[in-house]
Structures are given as C-alpha cells and as structure tokens.
Image 1 (cartoon, rainbow, N blue to C red):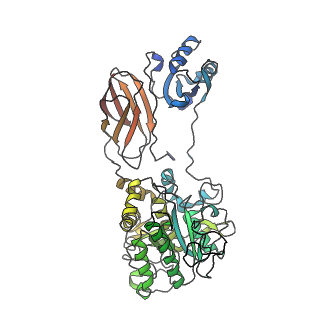
Image 2 (cartoon, rainbow, N blue to C red):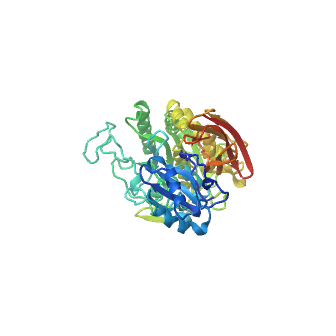
Image 3 (tube, rainbow, N blue to C red):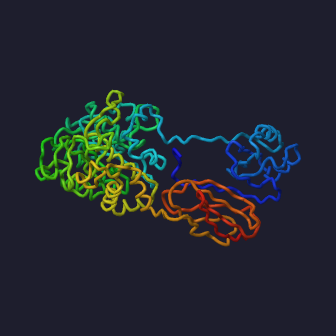
Length: 542
C-alpha cells in the first residue's frame, strides 16, 4: 500500500437490525459495488428498503453497509452484482425518499507531495518520509504549539515562493514601525535578525535558502520541492562569524525561555537549531567555550541543536572540529552520505559524530525561485536532521508534548535518542560515527509511537468495554504492525452487522468504537482479522 492514514479513523455507524436477507454481507465485494445514498429527513432506512421491495428491484440486489453520517441521513449500500450497479442506481434515484445517490469512488491518498521536483528528491525518499507524512507533515504539536526551527546561515531568499508562507513571524513585533516592540534591543526583528549586518533585512543567499528549503520548503503546493516539513515556521538568523553565531543562539535561547516561562504567551516554541557551518580547519571546541555553553543553555530550555561536521575527510575525534566536536548532550552532529549510502568526503568520528544524513547530490531550492539538483556537502546533511527533529515534535502524541512542557530538557534528550536509535546501519559508517548509521525518520517515528504506549504484539482483542453494553462498545486491541485490519460484528447465528477495514493508530491506545444502538438485545461476537489470523470475543447487548 503506497500510502495510508496513520491516525485512527473512528467510524460510528448506526447499525440497524433488519430481518430481510437483503442485508446479508457477501464476502469479497469491491468498492465499485458501493453506492452512497442520502435520504430525505424523516425517511428512515426501513422506509427505504420497504420502497426497494415495492419497486421492481430484486430485494437481494442491494443491502445495507453502514451509516456514514447519521445527522445527514447518509448511508452506504452495496449492490451484489457489479453488472447491476448502474441499473440499481437509476432506480434508487427515483424512490420518493431519496435525496440523491451516487457511486462510492476510490480515492488516491495524496501524502506524496505534488511539488514538481519531488520525484527527484531521493534525499527525502531514502529517509522514509512518505510514510511519516501520512501521520504528520509538521508545523503544529499535538497541543497546538506552533513549531519553530532556528536557522543560522549566510543569507536567505525570504521571498522564495517555496519559503514565504513558512517564514516565522515574531508576534510581539509590529513590522516596519521602527520600534523595538518586544524590548529585546532589536528593531523590527519580524522574521529573525541579520546579525552579520545588524539589521532586520537579510542578504539573499543561495546557501541559506537551500538549507532552509531542506528543512521547510512548503510541501504539496505544486511548486519546486518539498522540505522535510511541509509546514513549519522558519526563524532566520544571518551570521558570518563565531561571535555572531553565539549572539544568534542567544536570541533563540531568549525566545524559547520566554515561551516556557509565559506558557506560550510570549517568545517562540523553538525546538531545534541548524548550523550548516563551522570553523574550516581542525579546531578543538574548547577554543570556543561559548559555543558549548550556549548549546547546554539551549538544551536546558528544551532546544536541540544540529551541526554539520567538516567537509574534509578528517577524524574529528583526533583533530577536533567546531562545532561538531563540541561535547554537548544537546548537540547532534552530522556527516555526509551520498545516494549510494556511503560516507562522502566529510569528517567522521566514533565518539563525536553522531550519524550520517543525505548530503552530496541533494535536491532542494536555491535563491530567486530556483531549484538545485546538487546541493553538496555536510551543509545539506545537517538540515535533514534538524528538519526531522521538528517534524517528529508534530507527531500526534499528547504524552510527548506534555512531557516536553513539564521537563523540556529531559524530553529533548529523549528526542535526540529517538533520532540516533532510529538510524539505518551502514557498513561505511561503522566505527566512524556514534550510531554507525544514517538518519531514518520513519524508524524514529516508530520509536515515538512505542513511547506513546502503542502495544505491538500478536493479534489480540485485549478487552471489550463496557460488557455488557447498551449502545457504544469500545474494542481494545493489540496488533503486530500498523497494516490494515478488519473488524466485524456478528450475532449468535452468524449474521453480520458491522464490517470495516481500518488502519491501526500509531499513537495512543489501540481502540475501535462501535455503536450498537440499533441492535436487539442478545449475544454478539466481535472479530478482528489480519490476513489468516482471526481473534474473537463475546459481548452481551442489553
């Protein structure tokens, strides 16, 4: 299956108990046999099937499937024989209580973005992002926090069509009023700040634009490329020296600290920074103690930092590098892997370089509304990881965000651990990085889903509650993976009343809800099947 919704799709149909054999559920019927029927107000399903019998329709040609939206009186029915669908549809449309009826169509899930250069973006596809985007495309946490990535670089094209909608806006600043509204000493720092030239406006630069595009080029907008995040806010900080870098990091620190201390009323929910830069010759981080201090300070507020290592093939453990040689727990250091999943010309270190990520040959945007098919080096590798951190914070897991707000520094370390544990092991990175692997966002999402208490194991119905029940039944289940399952409800004689294919949720407790409000009292059986495996439990309906 190319794509599927990873979130639970709870369908709460009104299940009615009909005596006619017209409602029997034959196996292996296809969607081409399905019709969506909207009935007029006060015209019941019983009325509908009574009129079906009165017409010249064979009562065995059509049967009830489920109610789609009760308040709209909208239902799904099936026609037994495909060859009869059009004839049945025409007759149904002439029944007195039918408002309209039409075929139920298959849909194509569009989580693969429609950006014209996406098919060339091997760098996105190798990270498992097409699966992750079924769960989240970024931008907002499970509790509605607007996620921000801070990018320190040499310049940005803020008017690029693929970036402009995702640029962060400082909500405490009034644009172009010449006043320091937020009192941070910077006038009109609406999208961040140009620390290199000490002004609000940025130099248009292809390097920073390309880096920013990897993190957050607007996805599924029919333009250029897709970033790791389709929707995320990009805080822009232009730098050209280590002092400006430290000043920019401190800007981020204050914004996140304000956010934490005011419960989100001020500041910004910055979760990660990206540094696709460094000191080019081998330099021990101890020579730049403020860099190390600021990474630790950012981490204490819940902000991870990501840094590219050298583009020289050096052993960072022996020769040092800044910032990728800085020993902060809150820093993730990244080297460069190519299309063949091999270490490119880049720094390495079993102690100091955490993982690899796509670099040479990366497809991303460049300035002046352009695209580059070869944005090279570790400058491309680092933003893949920074973008992944931001994307994973948007996973629909309330437990994650609650933890992040109660213990931001500890949860930041959890996120780093999920990034590192989720790598694909590569022979070329063994003993050359901490993890011996290359970023895989899908694997990291799986680890978060485990943290969010999804139970994986042999197919099992863990419980039915309440049981006995009157109307709504909660079916608690365990599954071996997140592929589609089938849930059905039978009476004691084997008559089928409910049948749904569903995709298990990757987040929260495995649960399906079934509305039994229209059923007669008695004993029923719930089954969940996956392939040849079937599990069953009994429920008593009052």
